[in-house]
Image (cartoon, rainbow over all chains, first blue to last red; front, side, top):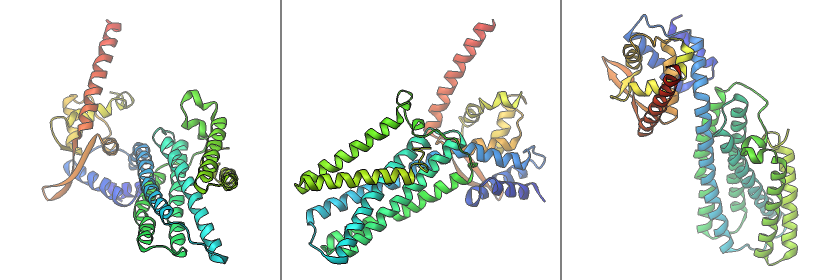
Length: 273
Length: 104
């Protein structure tokens, strides 16, 4: 087995494959042609060194790419929602009304998960150095991207079910379709970063994302942000619908959603142990 | 020189070798050896991961070229790489002055 064969094998073992692995092998091949007696070092060590050197930069980049892709989803989603608001909602009944309501609920829930998980991924991804923190950032990115895809899918369902003017349907389906390739690229970049990061546990929870002064109060801060979100949704809904009881009902739904979200995703997102 | 001693300064050294113009991996390693008069004789395979990381951090850029009929990856400093090198040089000179003042 030649040095290049061994290196190829060790790169694969270290999680480096595809175009990056081919590039490394081509560079080392050129090096060996310049100096067949070159002291390149043990292929296992060289491959490990590539993974060590690249995992931080790749995690940082994947967190940024993910956040960028989610920002596109967010902007288009807001444009669709504002556009829908200007059109208004027809009165529906029966199963179709239920399906429209559920798809709207799913959109809102997925959008909030995508925003929170994406922001947390970026916060950890830009500062992480240890494998456990890098893994947590990658995990958060995956959740955020999955939720971003959920926003697109539920908006497509919502648009398909809701009688709407053509321009809004075009906007809604474009909102659902345009970000998909970006989300795909982001998933690929997170996967590439993950493949060169060893499995590790013990990352700091939410305190690891906060400045030193706030880190001790991470639980209280999380509760405060939850209350702010509930008040914002309740007040916003009451104003938009001109109905205090509607605002209260949506505030309660938001609160229940937050608790369910923390119960279901809190550990994955590193919000609770 | 001990590899561990060198590791902390490797980024600056690699950036400095590219200040005069683009080079490929083998030439960068040779430049390091020659300029240090053989003191920086690292396992050559360990320089490539550093080059890839510096590129991922936006301090270097690279492209394939063809030389003697084979593909060769050539690295060059980016604008960020130049300013990072200038900063590292200033830091190093300050450090050397301080150490010399203590050792004198």
